[in-house]
Image 1: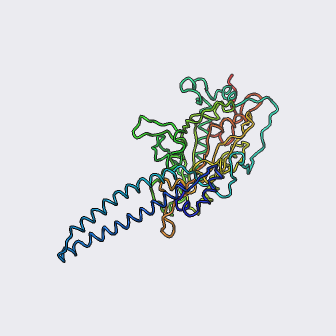
Image 2: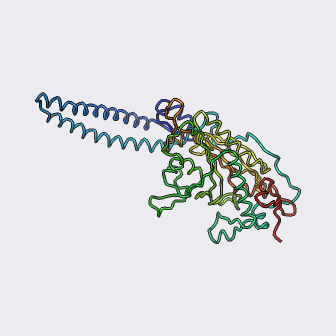
Image 3: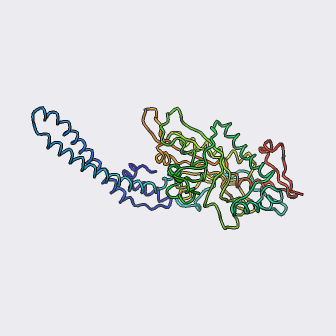
Length: 425
């Protein structure tokens, strides 16, 4: 959530910043509501002071034998007037909050305006793989190697799902355990959060109200809950409505969860297989940082995601996203994108993002600085990593002419030393 004080003091600066994300905002009505609210609040405070003054005078008037009835009448009148004003204040608060809740986060100043067309590849890792034979896509490889059962998944669930079988399940679990071990080495605390979250969690993460329809709701529950779309939604709420100490920060967490996305299905032929789906596995990393430590934390998360893919030996790129391609809640994002040979395109396996204080303001996540002042935390997250695109990339980039696939060395210890996946006979 954007600070109303910033909008009040520098509306044109905020407007220009949001325009980089494609939001053309006119703050005239918001500022008029804000002015009316401040004036009304001042009136209420002055009336309460007058009410207290009159109440305090009763004893003195009684002692002097004066008439206190007129005082009580006036106090009662002021109280009634204030009740009406306070009701109006609540309505003004709600109207202002609705406007603020809809606004996206302001992008960092160094980001280019616009959408995907202005994303910038800032680094490339390893050479693009070349093949001297006719290659297979990951769907063919999964079926020939006996790793995925698409037909039975469609039977028991429907389109946009898959079942990991035998060595496919083990390879998926190897990836997850590899990520977990790396994060533990780096001193991150492991969390296994609930998969059913309340509406306040979606609000704090900045996914609600704008993207409320993009999650799976369990509306028969009271109050309604939704399936987490990413562990970030849970982890960024871990310290909601808390005040941390300076010594607490930075807080570093990671979580393994399946992720559930109602918008994940696609009719595009290039999205077949497991590139997009309604459910996929991901290890998510989150940091709570101070304002001063925010940039350092972002660099750490980006480098962690890069290192994980690099150790897998895959060809990938790192892209700095333009303002309009950053998600609603984020001030900056770097995408780590792995190459999928059959599509000849790059697919994101990690988005490392800094929300600055946007999420913390919504969730009242604060800390005391060295002077004892209350500040909002900065929250950051990155996939560390999502598997549903790494799995296809490993198969397609490491495939051999005989239909086998070389297993990345870093995963072999999780597979009992197995180094090659061979086609079923």
